[in-house]
Length: 182
Image (cartoon, rainbow, N blue to C red; front, top):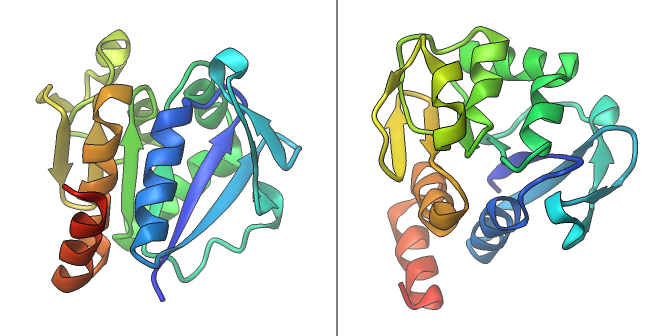
């Protein structure tokens, strides 16, 4: 079974977090929700929803996974970026060739971890200036090696589907698309 870790920090963007969880779950991927910040229950930006996570980041083994997902949201992406553990995991996964998927402001976590310099990326327009060591392509979803980035909330399903396409076989991908009426 495929496994994905999704890092959830206080102030996460609900749709950027829940779309990948939903899409991956439909395909039979194990999605492990990892709380960053000391509590298993994490509130979204705008306090629209709270998400109960499976484990705290300090308890996560970070082994045997197919991808790491970094949702955006303000201040969610800032809380991810400020975590020494998150930056360390991102660096380890990048160096190991594990897929890292970051949306909205979360590509700034790549920069903070010192990885993928020069990679083609996209991100939310408010953080483009922080991504000066990268090739900002703009657009909805951009893939470069083991880095997958997306612009923001409006492309959350496209982001989740691009992630899915990278980690499951073509038949599972097609079956999931059919089930979603895509």
